[in-house]
Image (tube, rainbow over all chains, first blue to last red; front, side, top):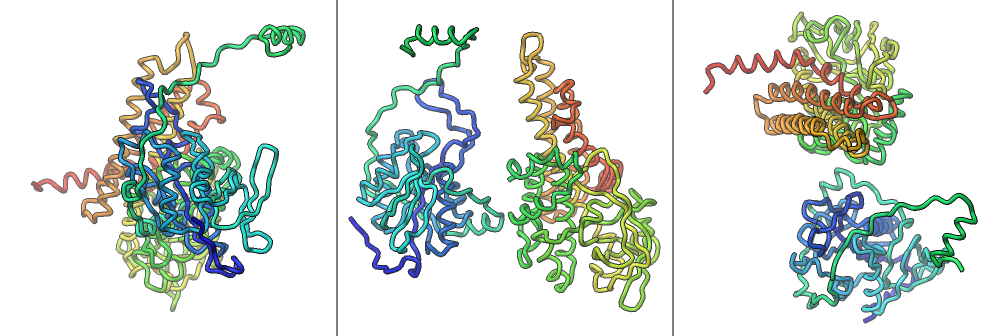
Amino acid sequence: YIHIINKADMAASKGLKILVGCKRVIDYAVKVRVKPDRSGVVTEGVKHSMNPFDEIAVEEAVRMKEKKLAGEAVAISVGPPQSQETLRTALAMGIDRAIHVEIPLAQLEKLQPIHVSKLLAKVCESEKPDLVILGKQAIDDDCNQTGQMLAALLDWPQATFASKIEPSQDSKQLRVTREVDGGMETIDVSVPAVVTSDLRLNEPRYATLPNIMKAKKKPLAKMSPDQLGVDLQPRQEVISVEDPPVRKAGAKVESVEDLVGKLREKGLVK
Amino acid sequence: FTQNEVAPHMQKWDAEHIFPVEMFTKTAALGFGAIYCKEEHGGSGLSRLDASLIFEAIATGCVTSSAYLSIHNMCAWMIDSTGTEEQRAKWLPQLAPMSRLASYCLTEPGSGSDAAALKTTAKSDGNYYVLNGSKAFISGAGATDLYLVMCRTGADGPKGISCVMVEKDTPGLSFGKIERKLGWNAQPTREVVFENCRVPKSNRLGPEGSGFGLAMRGLNGGRVNIASCSLGAAHASLLAAREYMTVRKQFGKQLAEFQALQFQLAEMAAQLVSSRLLVRQAAQSLDSGDPGAPAVCALAKLHATEQCFDVCNRALQLFGGYGYLLDFPVQQYLRDSRVNCILEGTNQVMRMLVARDIIGRLGDA
């Protein structure tokens, strides 16, 4: 399912239409606690906010609008009713309108990237964005899958772990610099494409009071997974969630020989 | 914003007596420069309750900066609510982004609580007033650009007072030395001196004789705001004490395991939360135009500033010896919040206002 832009020069066109994904997650500063029944973590009454990588994605979309590379920026969130607050934050940062795919509470805990990417793919069919920017991973599950799966489902190119997005030299594609294990990789991708944001892509702005007030009036549409025809049957079953083991005391050694001896003992060094 | 842009600098601004103008500009960019002014000329059009939340939050990062922000907001509101179209159009677009800063000048060396006895005169001379006299303890003096001066245009007493705006470089306007204070060091406090200072009559806010009423109306909001700053100080101190108590151990136990100290935290929470509710109630009474609002504002200021100072004091005690060191933040919250019991109307004046309101209601249902 390919949507090709008939534009000779991206810079001269009306600008890209961008779809940005935002996930509502437990705030990064919270001390997360495991539920007593070990089925998951405590989320009730706990402070939630927009996934930090998604904030970076939103900021990038708004900057692209300001640079006139993008024309319209739409935010989307798949989550519970409270995800609307997350979308309002995106609107307050400068996004034009928002879409909320509401997930009933019963299915929320079992929601997986495969479901989210299918929902996003369906929305892309109707919204027809030129660029989808997602956070590289969510800080609650650290999956780092949704962007990649979405690209595969749509058969679009993907540029993950982006630390810079700019028009390519001939302005017909996007040039994305990626942070990879070996260093930085720069690739050109044709649109439509999926890009996932990494930490150094930008520093998100504070939402200003006037923009927060304006955001209340921006359009926010609601959808359901049924409407989109996506089945949310879990493919995985979480068996248990546990705290990491308590750090045990280490041992002090007197000399380098002692250290090497101990390492040999533990079979860590031959 | 407070966590990233304010709190990390709180100590430095206090130690080096820095008035953080750059930070204020950033604050204003977020819409905090004219919070409860109308949107027409750049205000944020929000309520007194919203403002209270904002000042409380910023005060957790620096009480002094939040307090100055609230004074600036009070001045902007005075112009927004009472100014002519021309005055509003001239000043609000500069005050809202905090590209120009304002100060409020009521107190004089000879008149603090007895504010209506002020002696700074404004004699009429054609299209000008000629100001003579001096104001004391003016926050921001010397560093700010616009001075809202309550001065005598008429007879003795409150009805002879008008509010006149004086711009910084007006000839005849000068400043005394920067006062050395116990706290609020991130803000210059000085005498403001008028010597045959000529100010155009078009700078007068409201009709002649309305200045005292305007000043008092400004103070109602100002009291809610300064009480909100106290809330922020107490909140931050309580959290700091809580954290310290889980880290510090004596007699083989965390401080947090000693009941006497747990009771301290509980009492501090009661003081803080009750103060917060009262302050927000006062803010709401202003928002709803309740005629009894001034008394509620006085009551909130009285209660919150005293209770929150006590919370900071208790928090300092919980830190033990470390609490006394300048490296630890509670001493700054304590020093900075102490003056809240004194300015914007001493807590003794607050008692006068509240008592007068209570007795005056004798015969009400």
